[in-house]
Length: 112
Image 1 (cartoon, rainbow, N blue to C red):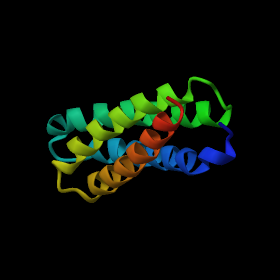
Image 2 (image 1 turned 90 degrees about the vertical axis):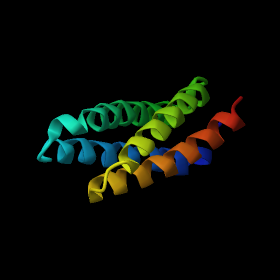
Image 3 (image 1 turned 180 degrees about the vertical axis):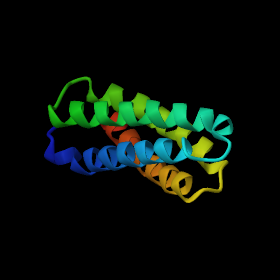
């Protein structure tokens, strides 16, 4: 596994982490921030895992596939939560999460 082979996954992970951070920040400014607590928590978990996956892929770690498997799960959960909300930032986040989950699943399957 080389960094070049998985550049699209690295890019998706970085984009997803950014979208999740933006979503979490925007959720903190919603009128009922308490209603957004799960979204914020999942955004942060997902962003952290996406950055970790991108890092492991970049350094060509033998653990990258496993990290990508967990990242895909976090992305799926975050996308499902964001899809429950009507805000544009949640829509963009859910889209980025779905893309990242698919990329990560491909890497995890290829390295299993």
